Image (cartoon, rainbow, N blue to C red; front, side, top):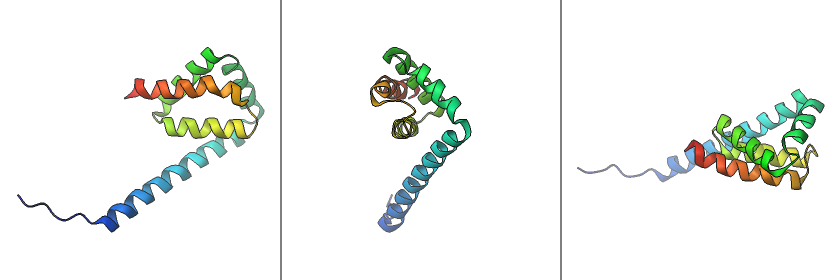
Length: 105
């Protein structure tokens, strides 16, 4: 059976469009979380990431719920950038994000 030739222009534009939409959606989700929760979110994040084991469990849970380690990582970076948690507090959560990815696969 003869296969149809690959349309690289359509393939490239579809991949770039999908990537752009994913990044835009993750950015909007992070912005909405920060705007909607404010100081309450800051307190919850501080409690959930106060030690690395609890942070790791939190990262695993969030990644399992979102089913996307990319979205979890982007949100985590945004929370560190905004000062909701420190970089040191985010390390355990980032480990949990990566472990959560293997659990959801």
